[in-house]
Image 1 (cartoon, rainbow, N blue to C red):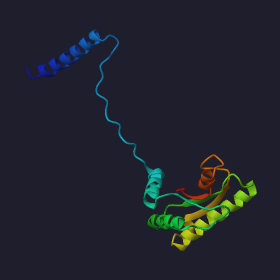
Image 2 (image 1 turned 135 degrees about the horizontal axis):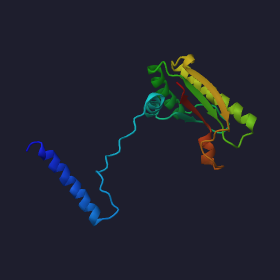
Image 3 (image 1 turned 120 degrees about the horizontal axis):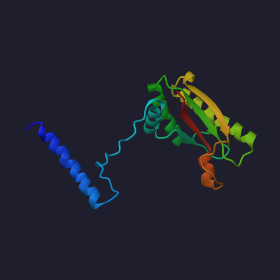
Length: 164
């Protein structure tokens, strides 16, 4: 009798499925869907997510034709520096950007000044220079399309990008 119980259960389940198919032709009963599992971030993606979560942002913004750090930018960079000092094997690239209203050459120069200013400030805050590189993208990689003041302001930035 003990061996027959699983067999009887299997027959009952298949009869139930067959009955459902008779009542609803073309419909095959399924098991309930499993709840979706959140994708686990690993490696550099996990570090990037942690970096942004703990420092508040990977970007700092600048005014007009300026590379001067605002108090808000300095606060963000201080949080970034804390994280980077705790992760000495992480290498970052500081990417300087300009708004698309500048000429190409001028945008590259402004982006370079912004990236260098951020790099210098992070070094001042105790991040080893070997952990930091700086590059200018000028107006080649806009964050926001458009010519409004708000769009232009969002493109005048420096981003701290985790490389490895």
